[in-house]
Image 1: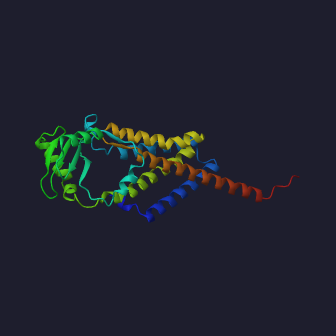
Image 2: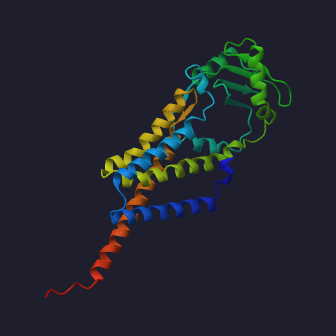
Image 3: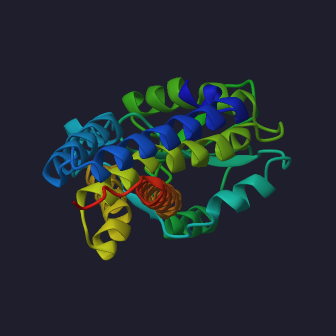
Length: 267
């Protein structure tokens, strides 16, 4: 899993490589070797590659329009999840490979409790039962789920249900996930700086593309998270700032060298 490689060392190495990349582009552009159309082409190729990796991997594309879609509107929800890291898990929701949503609780839910949960999220299945036992799986109306739905829930949630009652462990990777989302968009910010002359376009290119990615994931029946847009925006702005700083540094050094060079004497 990629998140396991997100460590302080790898983050520092990635930032160092991106800084060198920024200096190379700034030096070449200062020397009129880096054309803006070429930068735009490279930005387009990079964006297409990101779209392919981040969106094409959504498991519900073959069922686009039929799965359960939902949006996390709170961009700081990850912070709340981190605070819940040590809280024992007795209930949780999970998206299945079909795009459907399933909710598990140790104790069975009353009709009122199930209706309240459905008001928050459009769950397709509800499961309950003690950890280590076969869960009872119901549909959204509280009726026994069909065999294929029951089997799907048991296969994909069985491991998580077996750990119910233990402190949440998944939150441990939240920081790594957000750091990765931030780093991924730093190169886009660097390329946007060299591709466009307008500061407005440079600044909004990253957030705009992030919104396209999240909207595409939502269209496929997957989760759209404004927290990811926030992390992507931070990375894109960092890339723009890095490229701008590198360009200013290269320009200042060239001016200093020209000032030091002796001027030819006129005859």
